[in-house]
Image 1 (cartoon, protein in one colour):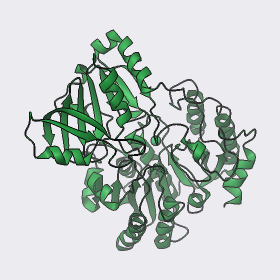
Image 2 (cartoon, helix red, strand yellow; image 1 turned 30 degrees about the vertical axis):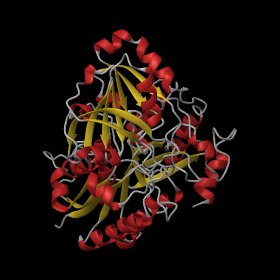
Image 3 (spheres, protein in one colour; image 1 turned 180 degrees about the horizontal axis):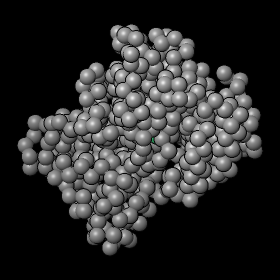
Image 4 (cartoon, protein in one colour; image 1 turned 90 degrees about the horizontal axis):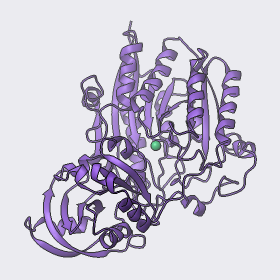
Length: 507
Ligand SMILES: [Zn+2]
C-alpha cells in the first residue's frame, strides 16, 4: 500500500507594523532558509532545526508525530522552511515570492494528501491585508478544497476569518514565554494523521474577542493566566476534544480587526466545540482589565539596578529595552537608553547592544585597540532614535554572527556590541561570543520581552524593563484604527458584537 504523503513547510516572521524597514526574502535567506532533504535531516532525531535560534521547533515536532503516530503509513515530504527575526512588513515582492514558491514546490512534490504549515500568525505585508491567508490560498490552489491542511501558530497570532476560510485545523503554543514549539508542531501532525488514518473527524468552533490587551503579563505560569491555561489542558483530557488554542495577538499589528481568539477542535462533536470555545472566550474576556504593569523610564531603571547591590554582585541585572525590543520587531538602535547608561550609570559595568551598520563599516578597517569618536544610532529611524556621539576603544571584530558583522567597543563603563543586522539579544551567548562574561556585568541590556528570562535564568538576579518611547511600547495600539470598538482603546462591555463583526460578518 502506498503511504499518505504530508508536505510540510514554514514561513515565519512576527511583523511589527510600525517598523520603517521592509522584510525581504534576503532577510530570511540570511537567517534561516532550508529545503528538501537537508530540511528533513535537520528535523530528524539528531538534527538541529534552526541553528542559532532553537534545536527542535515545530517542524521537528511534526516529523516526530509522523514517526510516532504514522504506523509506517505516513511520509513527511519537506518543502522549505523560512524564518527571520521580527521586523517590518513583507515587501510586495517577498509576499509574492512565498505564495509562488508554495505553488511550485507543492506542484513538483507529486501526489500530496495533506499539508502542514508552520506560521507565526502575525505576518503583515505591503500589498495585502492578510498574507498568511494568501499563503493558505496558494496551498489550496494546488491541493484542492478537501484535503486536510493543518497550521501551527504562535499564541501571539492574529486569527482571521480569511485564514479560517481555508482550514480550521489551527494549533497554537500554550506557553508564554514559548517553550512548546516542537509540541505544537506535534499536535498539528497528530490532527492530520488522525484524519488521514480515519481515527477522528475534526469539527471546529472559534470566537473572536474585541480586545488587544489583558491577562496581566500574559505569562502562562502567573496567577492571571494560569487558571485559563489549566482549564485548556483539562478540556483536552476529554477524549472528544482534539485541540484547544487561545490566541492573544501581539500589539504591534495594525490589522483593523485585531483581537484575541479562542479555537476548539473536537472529534465530530460541533456542539461541544461551540460550548467550549464560548467558555474559553468568557474566561479570557474576564481578565481583560488586567493590564501589563507600568514601566519605569531609563533613569528610574538605572536607579533600581543601582539599589540592587547584592544581586548585581551575585549575578547580573537584566534590563529589557522595552521600547526597542528586536524580539518584537524593533530596529535595535535605541540611543536614548544608551545615553542614560553613559550619563547616569558610571558606577556600574553595562553590556549593551546597538545596531549601526555604518559604524561597523567605519571600524572594520581599524586596528584592535584604536580609539575613535563617532556618531551611533539613527541610521534607520532617526526620528525615534536620534544619533548620539560616542568615543571609545575598539576591542574586537567578528565577521560571522547571526546579526552580520559585529564589533565590540568600550566606552568607559559601557561595553557596546555594535551589529550590522538586528541585534536579537536574548541569550547570554550574544555577549559571551565577544568574550564578555555574563556575571561581570552589573547591567545586561536585552532586546527581548520574555524569552531572555529563560535563557538568563542562571545569571539574572533582577529583571527590569525600561520604557523610552518606541515601536514596541504596549500602548502603540492607541494610534491604530480598528474596525469597531476594541478594548482597552474603547470601553467595551460585551464581546459579542465584536465577535460577530470579525468572525461572522467578515466570513
Ligand atoms: Zn509569541
